[in-house]
Length: 254
Image (cartoon, rainbow, N blue to C red):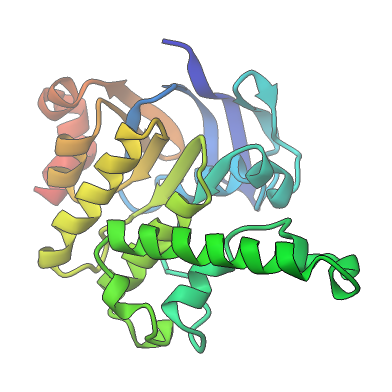
């Protein structure tokens, strides 16, 4: 299976501290890969480097063979990479549905010439966007909150909204940063089901997650980060039994 994402010798330092220190691993196309490790291991910094939020000091990030480190975040997103954040980034004073409908770029209604002509096309695009947005909300079971200002959603519902926004973008690769953190256990099953459905639809997933039950159920491959380096990587059963991983991380979260 070919690699969709290939991280090669990535380094990112802040002052004298290397948050990522020679990190290398590959993510097979169509897989679900978990990235685990203690707080401060460099997991979110890694996602920021992949998505262009920060620029690595050394190394390469390749997406389907194309080098993307150094590209702007919007250019990386246009290649088919979506991400969610530890802290949901919804626009709190507009509705859940309106947050969804902001996902798609490049619609006719965004162009100046649409003010002069093309209103039929604008209306058709908006109707399709609304239909697709409602469908994505239905997939994560929060369609009933479509008219609720998103700032009033629970943390779990905001995480579901983040996931629905990723789904609506129809990415090739989705990077999900702690999708179940702070979520009511009742909603974790909904999130897990939604992520599994994304995988079934052919989206490659990379998930930062501390909930080991979620990791073990979803992931075919696990990368363990420790002090910015890849400590171990392999199948969930192998990682779970590895004494080095147990000492460095799993024993602390058991």
